[in-house]
Length: 142
Image 1 (tube, rainbow, N blue to C red):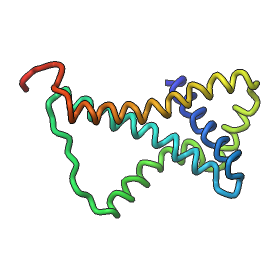
Image 2: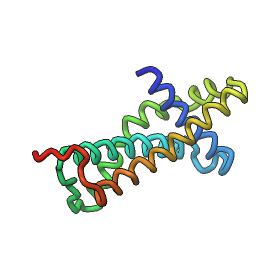
Image 3: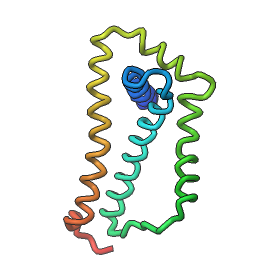
Image 4: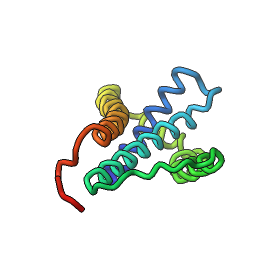
């Protein structure tokens, strides 16, 4: 679990540094880092739920929620991420932790984070494609 939290913090750091370099401190790089880290976790959970539903022959429920409900759900999703990564200036501690690394170690982790971000989107799109176009591989009638 510690390794997952470490990688999660580094994903936040990568997005924070990217936003800081691209837009400067004016645009709120900690919010960009928070959004990217939380989005990747959400995409992975969503892809896993869809894949398990596909294997169990369950149709995914996609009800039409009103927009205010979706906004509240999104804020509730971001709240624990915010408390873990940003609240009370914690993002500065995280940035100081990884800023101390040498360039080679950061380059190695940056490649892993970029693969993770692209892989999160790819996993979701692959799962959605399989739901639409492929029969269940287990062929078990539930």
